[in-house]
Image (cartoon, rainbow, N blue to C red):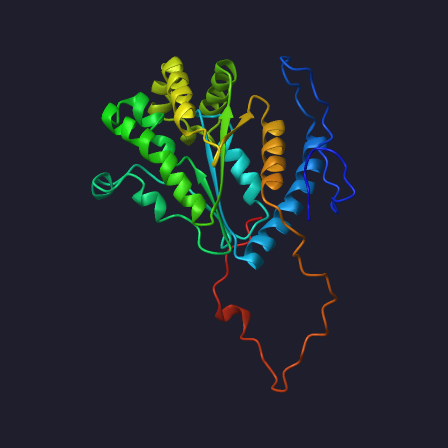
Amino acid sequence: MSKHDGKKSHDDPANVVYHAEVEAPGTKPKKMSTEVYLKELEKLQIELVKLQEWVKREGLRVVVVFEGRDAAGKGGTIKRITDALNPRICRIVALPAPTEREAGQWYFQRYVAQLPAAGEMVLFDRSWYNRAVVERVMGWSTEEQVQEFFRDCPEFERMVKRSGIILIKYWFSISDDEQDRRFQERIDDPLKRWKFSDTDLQGRDRWEEFSRAKDEMFKYTDIKESPWWVVEGDVKKRARLNCIHHLLSQIPYEDALPEPFKLPPRKQSAEGYVRPPIDSQTYVPEVY
């Protein structure tokens, strides 16, 4: 069984270790070199593939919730988790604003529909916790709805856990200065500009309101059965590695990867095949 506790272990066949230097508490974390980051990321992604195969073989149901402020690093971490995984086994859920019909449903109803079947992992890029933070701060839900959420959410998650689903929740923490830097980077980059919205701009001016909302959300929903795990997100590379490393530690698994083998000779058809003339098909122009 693979164990990931941040130090070498004879029980860890992959010997996955996070090698980055650890700073003293209270100090600002240093940046990480790309070389070290990519080396460690590859190790962790290999373990994620092993985990995926174990989830499939054992019929596990896994839900991972990613929450945090805008630009805190949720999406980048999710992308690195799923890079090498089978989308039929590990699925990302990023729901849009509810439709008029969904707004009239039980609040958790549209999220329940996204929960995994046996042999699946679901990564929620924002989740039912929208109600407790974003909707509350932006005035999209009433205080009565928020209080009802606080009453219902712990029981909902206990029910999810009792059903056999593995539920893991991450909150990505980021400083206001780093958020501003990332927002400006998005605005300046035409490939990222779509990520910045009017909601981001409004949320930026309500920093303290978001902080209070998050603190109250933790008070009601940081429960023993499904605790919140906080990821320090100011240094993206470290945040991604730390989160993936921790995720692997939360689900006991074994290496279920099939053994490599040499391909046998290709079987030849007894009937001769003649390829149609090239000019009978329409090809994409070779611009490059």
